[in-house]
Length: 126
Image (cartoon, rainbow, N blue to C red):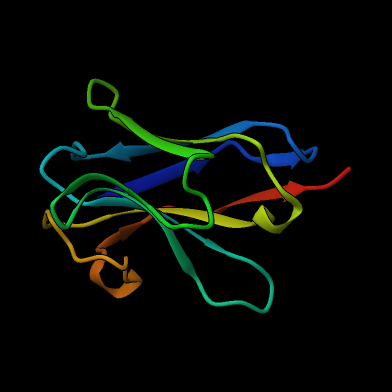
């Protein structure tokens, strides 16, 4: 059974950094679209970044562009979300997701992803 295990997060001060991890069992992340989503209270789930979506190696939503970076280590296999210069509006539950296919379209749509991590809370507050 495929499982994605997310970890990291917690309470971070504004302007600070943290890194989320998403470890996979059974498969590796290469040759798949892999994304991070987030959902804040009362808001819809938002796709914030993707590896191998559309024709782009990396894609980021405007809300996180230049502050967040997705990377992967297929030897583990684990995908990371490095989050820098955090803002209070980044507070949300963060989810990793992987697809059976590659080159999924942008904007990132949750229903196209096949496997999901359990979500991890990131709270940005002083």
